Image 1 (spheres, helix red, strand yellow):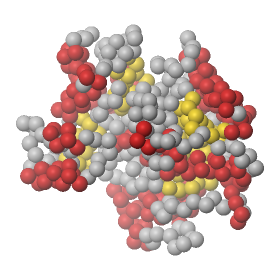
Image 2 (cartoon, protein in one colour):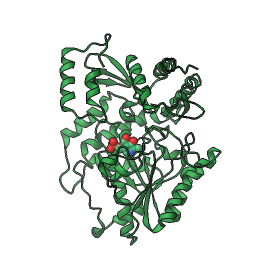
Image 3 (cartoon, helix red, strand yellow):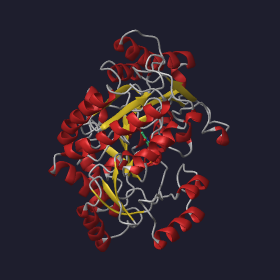
Image 4 (cartoon, protein in one colour):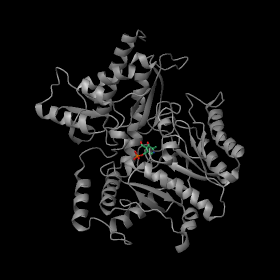
Length: 466
Ligand SMILES: Cc1ncc(COP(=O)(O)O)c(C=O)c1O
């Protein structure tokens, strides 16, 4: 963004123009960016801090898309990539490599229960596409030819490719109408959102139990012989209504029971909640529940390179054993040795630096600061999360929980105010704080102070001062 205090060098302006003309950035409006001196062009980073091409330092409060778990600038990962490229850069057909064998074993060790066999790929969407295909094929291999429907939750996000485009979803069909018709068999259950409940209930327990029951209702209504799998994130990530809505303790054990009762495979999407983000290795570990299939990406390699995995239990894997049963899917970059070497180096950092415990401890500290700031502002309806995956729900009215209307432009006003303070935060109905796990208390204090200031200024401008 160009401001008087932040002029752009001729070189930056050239890069910006090239980007504006040729780079189709994800979910950004290139007309608005051109008017506002965006996009910011980042050239390096360390920890939470990133530096743009004019030397300005910014704090990336959400570590990219909640994915840079070990922080920016970890040369250990770069070295692992270089070393592996110098040894062997790809896998001759029908063979595998040392880092892939080691990573697969490591994932089996880290994930709960019997999960033990990983299908490697290069993104969360691919991992979830793979999970759905495995689930459907599993039932066919077992002679259950009619089990193909997939239950996901309204307000969840599982990716943007084929089937994953149709899993979860929020804001009505808004983002999906372009791609209709929807594939058959997509069913949607309620979110276990205690602040904005979709199901009846006057206590957290009732809401939690009823949200789990909404899955059972769908299975009964559609017929257990038609449902292949249920998929949900351990808890939802950066989505406009349900971000960081942590379900009550009853939820996942109940979902497990329901899935077992009706022969439905349980898929847990740990693309964001995995690898320490919530203060445990995986989000589902907070509920001591083991899925049949788990997917992961992002934190598996702190997004240094693209890596993802779909890990399954022996019960699932056994349906694909033997020549006649092979899972017929090949993705060229799945199981890439260089990417696996990067993931191993990333996991090594998480272990050596004890980042899981650190996320739990700093997460508690962050929550205390959020509660303290939140209690000062009428715009903050709710503060929630677990570990370093947290959100503030922004409301126009704390009693009705009504959101600001789009014409109030509150999100843009806030994003600009954060940018003036050199913070990268993009509000979407909520303010999401999911910093790298190496965040310090001083950094938390710094960005929470800015959040306090910005909320205060916006409230004054909106005439809703506390
Ligand atoms: C929970 C969850 N699952 C899946 C995905 C898709 O991952 P990717 O963008 O790597 O395809 C995302 C992306 O943000 C996610 O948040």
